[in-house]
Length: 356
Ligand code: ATP
Ligand code: MG
Ligand code: FE
Image (cartoon, rainbow, N blue to C red; front, side, top):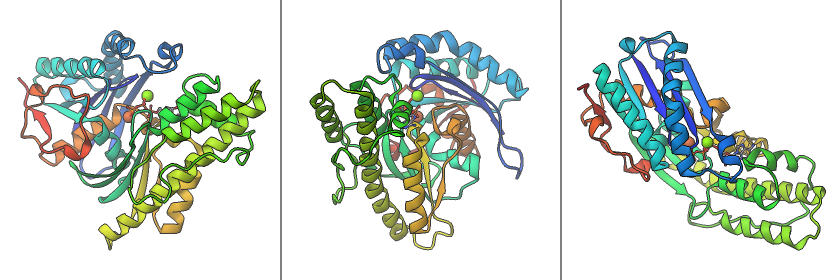
């Protein structure tokens, strides 16, 4: 099976060809990602209208490059898979409509893929992981813990009640005058900072409710930053280090609850695993914390390569392959309308359409 994947839900324009032949491990034949970070940097965050226009400008060339790179022509492709939600609706329209046009012209099936399903199934592409496993998705738009039980079979165990974790990093950076995107810059500044100078709150720690919250932490950071006048480099470093320590601690509390719940819900799982996905997975402090938790709980910690943790089209093509392979092809992807909101645990019948 060969599938062309297209991803345009946020600020990356991406296309990829993934192949699965017989019993061999799947192969990523091409994986092109064009980041729009520079277009949005001046605004300190993703501007939806700019994102949609940038996708329009870039997508044709990115798809052509993905096909050329893979050494495949459209004739060798079995289906087109495109992100149909959740995300910024302007970008979703560009990607899904382009995919519909290509699929219609080439007479191929169209698979409308949920972006979160792409993240959820990536560990099967990279590590051949078996179901069930636990997924921690931490990106600029999402902070969730999901039990991944099968293709199209997800249970959301936790989500954020306010900001996403990546968003908290980005806002913290902005308050401290660090450039966008904030995550990598906060991490860099934290390296020379004193993590115990500020006792920032650990939101939701110990709460019986399984969810995340980061807005209280953000407020505490703002208060600390505005109380210091003038704010020097060492102050910024100390705030970043203290913020990161609070985040890691809060995350550890939520994740260890989920690990325990997983063991109770799926007793006898041969090789229980925690997979991390999303741009925040790049953070070394957070990664080390998760590694330690997994070691203590007897879980394997799986962190796919960063290029496949952040937004990309290989994960969308792969989700398409998983769906084709399961014969989950009842509904017509050509009729699917992009959805800005599309919770993963609401997925029912997968969306695949035969070529027209
Ligand atoms: P979506 O949420 O729709 O999946 P996104 O573009 O917001 O997409 P990603 O591209 O997966 O998310 O990740 C970007 C986020 O990851 C940003 O918020 C960024 O600040 C954060 N990030 C990147 N590197 C680091 C890091 N080293 N430490 C902490 N956060 C980081
Ligand atoms: Mg992004
Ligand atoms: Fe994403």
